[in-house]
Amino acid sequence: MVTMELADMTVALGRRMVVRNVSATLHSGSLVGIIGPNGAGKSTLVRASLGLAPVAEGTIRINGTPVSQMGRQTLARMLAYLPQGQTLHWPLAVERLVALGRLPHLGPLSRIRAQDGGIIEQAMQRADVLHLRNRNAMELSGGERARVLLARALAVGAKGLIADEPLASLDPGHQIDVMTLLAREAHGGALVIAVLHDLTMAARYCDRLLLIDRGRLVADGPPADVLTPERLAGVYGIGAYVRTDGNTPMIVPVERVSAD
Amino acid sequence: MNAPPLPDRRHRWLLPLLILLLATAAAASLALGPVPLPVPRILSALTGHGDRIATAIVVDLRLPRLLVGLLVGAILGLSGAVLQGYLRNPLAEPSVLGASNGAALGAVVAIYFGLAEWNMALLPLMAIACGLVALSMLFVLAGNSGSPLTLILAGIAVSTLAGAGISLALNLSPNPFAAMEITSWLLGSLENRSMRHVWIALPCVLAGTALLLGSGKVLDALSLGEDAAQSLGLDLARARLPILLGTAIGVGGAVAVSGSIGFVGLIVPHLIRPFTDRSPSTLLLPSMIGGAVLLTLADVAVRIIPTQAELKLGVVTAFLGVPVFLLHLMRERRIW
Image 1 (spheres, helix red, strand yellow):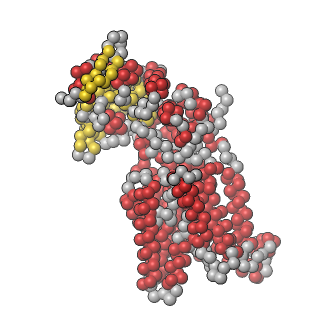
Image 2 (cartoon, rainbow over the protein chains, first blue to last red):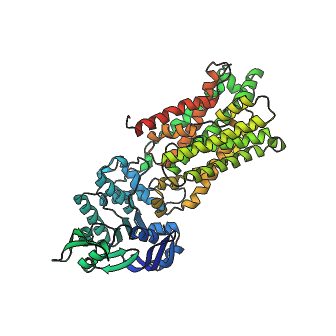
Image 3 (tube, each protein chain N blue to C red):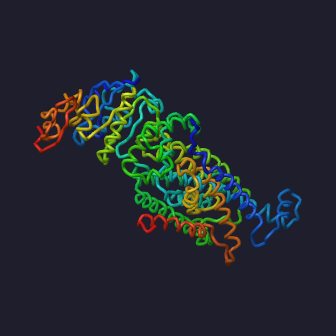
């Protein structure tokens, strides 16, 4: 179990306040989507939650312990992170790349052990990349690479997973694959947080959405409550066709309207 | 479930093979030269039962030269592999980045302005200090950009500045052989080395190696970029110091006794990478041994290639280094 508590969190990059007074408590077992326009502060919010950006005010607690008082390695074992536009600098084999997820569990000079091998295997299986294990990770297609990078994050074996735009540049089929995978991890007991741009995907797979606008949390709740036409107009500046029959809304952006 | 093959079980033969190569290169270095010696005479000279001539050649001339070459080659190979991993750039290495020339400037100042006469320890210390300054300048100039172009430009700037400093220092010094000395510091040489040089280089190379060999985990994590590396539990700010110090101390000590020998740290990781799983950590120890092999072989080559004056070691390594740049150029232009 992992519970992440953001209390009145404010993050400044230079002089600019990028995230302002965000409070939310996130529990394991749910897939939480963070949505909002470009530059709203979504990535900064998740980076700060991971201790990668300095928090100006407020605190982040994981299972009651402030992140600022946790060692980096302790935090790394609790929360896995898939950065936006993850790059790979060396042509590693897929299996070797996924194995990097075990680094938080290794001592300074120790090497990967047999039990790590089992966890790596499992992570590759969950992300459906076992058949790619010996391929050069730099030569994969976009969809394959996205799943391999997810497998790397799963190999950490953390109770929490934060994925920043895991759907970027994926075709609809692979988007569904990745969202299904994230939802399965969440419903298997993990806390999964995903920064998303596709509102229909977010609505369909997430249990809860946090809508961020200019650094502020403007809506927090089940997708059907968050994604109303008025909010879409106010935050994204779009007129959208919102179909709400059934439980999950379907959103088709139709026209540009001025925000505010 | 079967135990899955672990990534580092492959390529097990690489290290034994390199050690074998090292032994062969070392034997060749003791045996070959203007006066070729058969193995039995070398062995008896090494064990103290040899004739006077063989003992003079092997123990006083070739052995120190071999040992200095091994130490210098090892630290150049290792620091090349570490810098490439740390900067995520396959063109990084101490001489391209200006660290070698920086250290050479320190050594030149120490020698030609009498500091080394006053206290021998000042020679490696000055080399280390100037190497450190050069590396720090490089990191400031290149910033955090992972771009090869920025890094190479910054490296050229630092390296050229330090090279100009060496020429200036030698021109200013009251030294009739300045021109000759300049080339030997800029191109590197193992000519006429004695055990004194071994004792200067040894502690520096050992300390540098100890600092650098521990960086494997950080380098592996960095292959995913800085954010991912930190989210894997690594403290990058703290990891930078041993890499910076290890390179400066190791390369500083090496350059203080051999001059600035280029490209070893560039060539060796390149040759070795295809025989590893390509992660930076598996490259470290093999690059260290490979560097020692390469430099020893290059030194044998300068001795047996018949030229009027002995070839400078850096000339040979530069000839070997150019193809590596060409290969990158061709890949960049998609000719390869």
